[in-house]
Amino acid sequence: MTAMVPARVNLITLGVTDRAASQRFYEKLGWQPKARAHEASITFLALDNVALALWDRDKLAEDAKLPLTPPGFGGFTLAINLPDEKAVDAALDAAVAAGGRLLKPGTRADWGGYSGYFADPDGHPWEVAFNPFMPLDARGLMVLPD
Image (cartoon, rainbow, N blue to C red; front, top):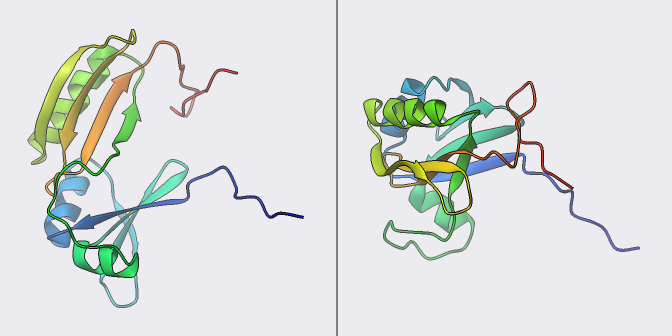
């Protein structure tokens, strides 16, 4: 019997150049550190249904056996879905006030929703979106249509 990979994500680790600065940024968004590794080289933040880790960029690349390339688009974005356009704009404003960089202001999207992007201090792109085709449950988690 072939083992299956569970359909879930438990942890997202961001490679950062200044962990203390990155931690301060996420704390300003209201995300609180929950635990630190015994060697104090990594920061964990508990989010709904997933944990976010901040680890030194060079150590993360070494651990994954990948070359350390300059920051730039890495082929992915992280996303936060919110209940309406006003909440999207407020979240983008909060990210900028916390020290993030606005990549794209909230705008109506071709796919029928509303979204914008910000980057954290290390340039990791975050999309903030309202998607009328993917409602959120009472906890704010996406309900994917069948």
